Amino acid sequence: MIKAATRFFIFVCLFAGVLGYSQNKKKFSSIPNMLQQIDPDDKVGSWVLVYNNYGKGEEIKTSGKLDYVPQFSGFNLFPSEDSFYYIAYSEGGKISYVLDTEGLKRFVGRIDNAQEAAIVLASEGYVVDEEFKDLAGNYHEDASNYYLDLGKVTSKECPYQKTHYTLTVNKATGTITHTKDNGTYIELYNKKCANNPRLLKIEKRKNPRKMSLKKHPSADNTYETERLILRPMSPLEDRDFVFDLYNRPKFVQYIGNRNVNSAEDAENYILNRFAPQIEKLGFGNYLLVTKEGNEKIGAVGIFQREGLEILDIGYSLLEEFEGKGYAFEAAQKVKSIALDDFGLSKISAIISKDNISSQKLIEKLGMRFKNTLYFPAKLRN
Image (tube, rainbow, N blue to C red; front, side, top):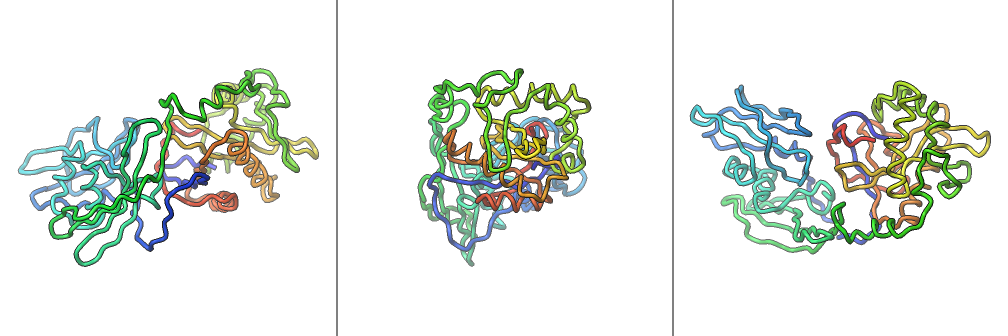
């Protein structure tokens, strides 16, 4: 389940081969926490680190008071189209700005810690890969060197390719003294790749799943488990249930306020949010109905979110049906749908930090924690 807050855990289940990792190393924390470890040269006076997400700036570190002008571009240590960082600082009575990784390197100056070493290497195209931090975002050090595991986009062809490197950085000079190429750890397709096999497969399907959901879905859109029927939501038949579910306190707490304030809002939500994905991809959000009693008890789905390349499992239940194993049964089924019916090689789950029960359920599915991310409200379903 997804909480309307800024930080979320992401669990990833990988079924494609990736690089093994067993060394005992320290893990980098989140990108914002790393940037807060910057200790600039003495010539820098007051400074402010700003995170801009979808046009809204947030000061995540301040060192003294500073009267600066908000900026509309900046740098990233991990590529993102919708967010960036910048630094405003005073030097010799003048306000200056760090808007790219080269400027960031100059701002850092002498390397004082492993986080700064990784930040400086961003100017050479390396990233602390929050997508696969276990493979490209760890480090250790000795008296002389930092040893950093970082990722790098080494090909922008489709699929674009990331490679995993171990870099030795001399503490005294800040120079790279050794680079070890550990090989490709991930190849990814994105929406712009014309040869994306998943999209090609879906386009070739002559599948009734792409029918409009303005009518009640046919049996071909329906799945079953031992105790449940999973079917796409009908705007008219299910709008009252969605209105009830989406305004339950636990739903609002862990998933967020969807502004579904009436049955009509719920009908429009189904038509405008759920139906288009199923029509486009063949899978999406499913209503959960018990075989015994024909009761509507919740929803489960596989979601594609604008701005994120991952596909994730999400679910919600009415409180009176929790603790009966329905959520696991439904989530296990949609995981099977993703892998077996649509041939996906990776599926994720985005879970709020304090939703412990959902974290346990996702781990029970065989998925493991990968990293914490900031999840803009724009991307939530």
